[in-house]
Image (cartoon, rainbow, N blue to C red; front, side):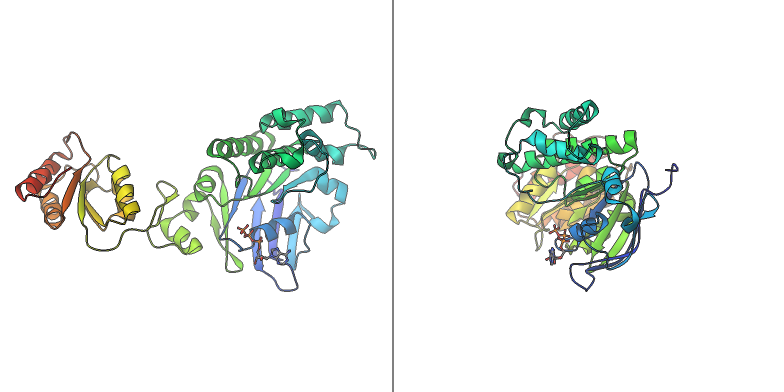
Length: 367
Ligand SMILES: Nc1ncnc2c1ncn2[C@@H]1O[C@H](COP(=O)(O)OP(=O)(O)OP(=O)(O)O)[C@@H](O)[C@H]1O
């Protein structure tokens, strides 16, 4: 393999389950060491694409190239030695321990009798260690939890020592810690062994952090692709998942509840992240609120754009001006309650203290 050339390349690939294509004209090139996230709404065709690339479904058009060779021309044994696949679903096993399942990943390298040598044993142990499933080695695979099963299957894929790794929702059953562990592991494998990883993910925040390249599937096509910075903009994520504008916040990589509708009832004095918990509480309660004066790219400023009905902003790195406070005061005086999240005002937001005075003078309760 020439360094830098593509490990996997899809050219105008059409995929589907019958004669009609479900997703058309997919083009993607994956280089060694790259982690590609496949994202898109439920039913958009991510699994179908992965199964086609894995050779489990016939391509309805276009080509899949594995290490520069058309997939159909790659002999099955060589394909199994090159590409590992972890799909969703629980493989039916009877009386197999978790270690037995992982060992199956070595079969492309063993002789006809499937007897594992020392090197195979080492690879199995290393993969189980890396995925944290060594303690499950003798447990019945049929009776482990969904998250444990997912990690055992990942160990099976890794011990195959593939050059291309296809993963369908590898984090869907995992707790937060295990999600992080798995993504760090995938990045490590990509970096250290030059594996090309293609993984479908539902967690936009994880894809944003872990992927080098993101391809978005919607309405029967690869709607757009690019680096996480190019793909995870508020507009594109909203379009991809049919979200309300502002529901996705690219700064935090998270989705927020819908902004409560109506005129603001509560005015929140915040800044520097002090208001986040209050903003989210009001959003949960469905209480429309206003806030200010916030600096535009302050943590509260960014969140206010998604959740507040009204927000008064000051330019970044400028002290809050008399004009901004006046605009905020007008909004505040129309509210029934003020919440002050700031315990001390600093140089840049000193004038926000005038908002507290305005509330008290107008007899608006402050908490
Ligand atoms: N074996 C099958 N035969 C016929 N249609 C299928 C089959 N498997 C899936 N489909 C259909 O193909 C479409 C795409 O399914 P697919 O599982 O690829 O989507 P997905 O993007 O992976 O979805 P999700 O995010 O919900 O896992 C769906 O409409 C689904 O019902």
